[in-house]
Length: 352
Image 1: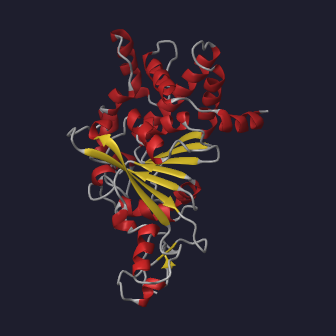
Image 2 (image 1 turned 90 degrees about the vertical axis):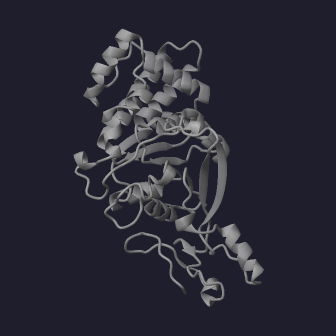
Image 3 (image 1 turned 30 degrees about the horizontal axis):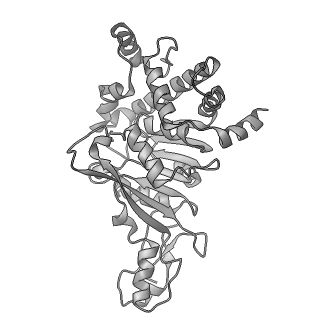
């Protein structure tokens, strides 16, 4: 029965954006559902204070606390040896709605696995899980405190939905119940470093990947012990995914991935050479989401926020290929080579 219900939920379960916002806001103001303080005991005093002042224990408020922000400067409390710091910031719910509408065209389906890389305190993960029909949603976060806060809000939201489904008058109780069931069984937050080989299977199982790497926080602003930027690791992880997988980032990875297959084939055609699906392993699109005010860090209203979508394409083999040579007149331009090093699973360019 549970298996049948799970399959049915994956097909039918999906909240509207406004219903999600209404439920989340109501949850934060709720006095009747005690949050799971066993996950983050530090939030108990803040919740009690909020009850007395009629202010909610909002995730936006918690995001500004030392509990969440101290990893901006140091990850030493986690005994992390690969990464020194982890900058925190998040896309607003309206920003996430625009990503889903503009980039994914609300096409996240019942067989999709969503992975949020650097999921922080979990708001984006929860919204994507609740408002799409994905099969599974997983967040991976390197900072223990942020990971625990995400687990805290995920479980609180799950409890809220289950309770509301029993006494719902304004919303479809069935959708609430199915979403609560889905959060309990198929939404997960795990502490970890996405560059660690132990997480390779998780990343390669993804069909939708999201990463807030805005303004070099996965680049020069974050120090790693691997010798490569996190953006380079992210581009490499994407290369190892299956055809059809979509990666959405808030900063371009073109420095590492190069031109997409359509642009490369145009260049090939201009040289009167034969076009090929093996020119590279992805297609690229850029979307204007709107003002930087769609983010938690804000900024100049005139500056724009962009989403970059990379879609893994079908090729002649199972291993990602690309034209490894960058010299126009070289014969290597017509002979694709493997894009991933089979030993370290990082991007590599070789001239055939």
